[in-house]
Image (cartoon, rainbow, N blue to C red; front, top):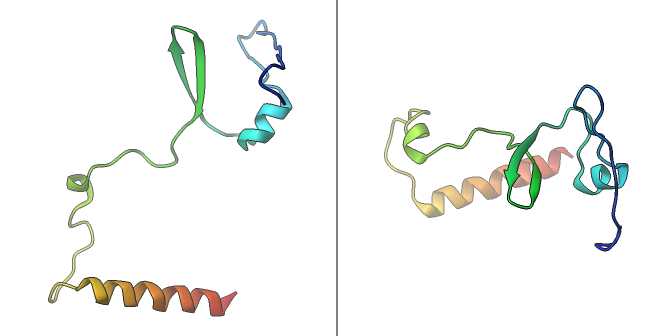
Amino acid sequence: MTKAERLMTVVSTKGQVILPKSIRQHRHWDPGTRLVVEETPEGVLLKAAPVFAPTQPDDVYGSLPYQGPPKTLEDMEASIVAEAKRRHARD
């Protein structure tokens, strides 16, 4: 689909709008995809809704308690590598 190509749709009597298949495929909007609708000066903007609600560090800080000395960056990186190797070996 080129930018110059104009696609058309119609608002049904129930207020529903069918998005053209080429747009749904390009955006990977499968049935059931939740969309955010925003009114803009140019028209209406549709965006895929975020999967998770936005959070701030203070919202989740300390949600998983840990007992023991703080981990170093090297410890954390080693754990990430070990988990990646474990998952790769599983596949």
